[in-house]
Length: 266
Image (cartoon, rainbow, N blue to C red; front, side, top):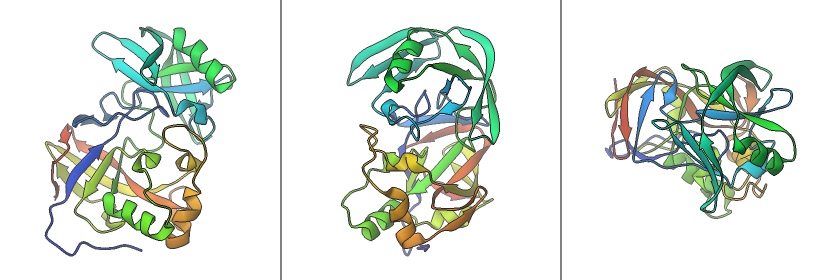
């Protein structure tokens, strides 16, 4: 079900969401710099277990309440919970280490030793280590950029009838207003300028169980996938049939994207 806009309301950015460590609490900056590897500072780090398998909040909801603060200029990283610093220190890159993402591809990086590894291992109940992504790649699941519309969120809420649904569940980089519900699904391969950047829209995001977790606590508290399926059914994606919500995108021209910027089709 795709709803097209019926007015001349400008398409514009209304929210941006990033996190230095994949799976942690989201920051909502007023602007971001994007390059071919994604938004600068976004998903700069990820966690792997003893088998070097990437650990996300799908498997470890205990990560969801944690907030990471990374200062690239001073190479310092801190992990906080409810304003309390749990671990902080200097980021010093160690041996090369890749992470297995979904058994589909490897993301290259380097091991980052520091106090956060013990804290995070205790938190998730098994030994984990922090990986800093190599230049040219961030820790995004598939493509470095993602986008969804506020109208799509509204369509989900209207169908689900469970009250307000927090868009943070979907962890999308860019949220836009001024388009119809799921209109973004029709944009595959089209280019848009946003601020001083140009991005190319990609295919749909096949959602996983991470969306069922409360974005504050990490507790599974909403049958998000069923709710999407109730009104959208199962749809095709590059990863097979599933429950799609939002789209991927890539950077064509690096630049700055800010809240309030309009999307202009090239």
